[in-house]
Length: 86
Image (cartoon, rainbow, N blue to C red; front, side, top):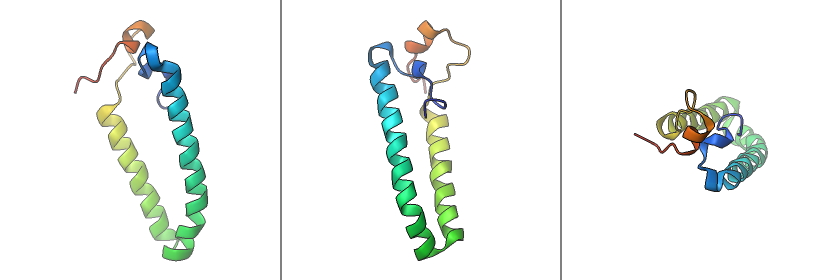
């Protein structure tokens, strides 16, 4: 998760909390996915399970593109003060 949203995506005041929360959420998602994958394959089949997982990834990509700030051309100081300008 931190590879997708680097620490500078979060304001300086809450940077460590933001990274910690993002990491915890990704670990929780991995644990739930590991538990639910075999159940999904057994109940609805591998094709529909994979389609459901694809939908989750597409929704995540859309949310990330829509609301995550772009920090590519910013310095660390500028990136930490960036607000979502949409």
